[in-house]
Length: 157
Image 1 (tube, one colour):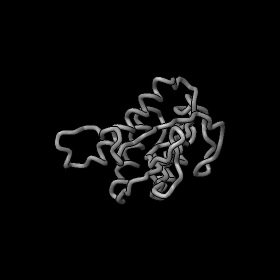
Image 2 (image 1 turned 90 degrees about the vertical axis):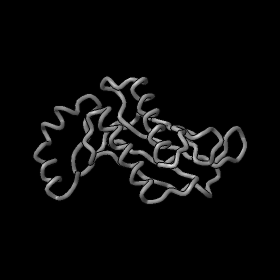
Image 3 (image 1 turned 30 degrees about the vertical axis):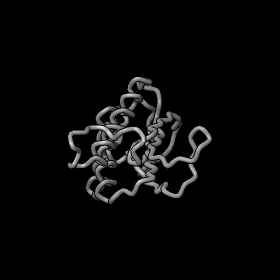
Image 4 (image 1 turned 180 degrees about the horizontal axis):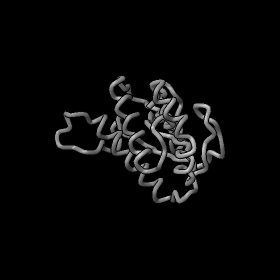
């Protein structure tokens, strides 16, 4: 259902990508009633990308998300989601050698410049299951439970 794209201008190790993807998945599934197997996270190396801010070329790390709006999901809940993703990025990129820092300073090449969330998924199919409208997840989960159990048996989470 949700599609997150992490565009990174700094190199990320596979372990860092794993941690970021797991954090985004946990944040999204905790905040909304979305099963983890429907949270999609894609990483794109943006080191050689032409990216401009204020008309000037910049290297920028960013997360873009396409989610389902409505169903009681407010701007405040999406802003909180963005803040949690930003904090997770900082935790992963700071690693264990933080020197006491909990956030990456503005201007540091590791800084996450943007978390942008767009709510415009109007419909779709994933894993062969028609997606529910936002706010209708509980009934959708109940109705599709046998399909989810079969997917779990096949190794999907």
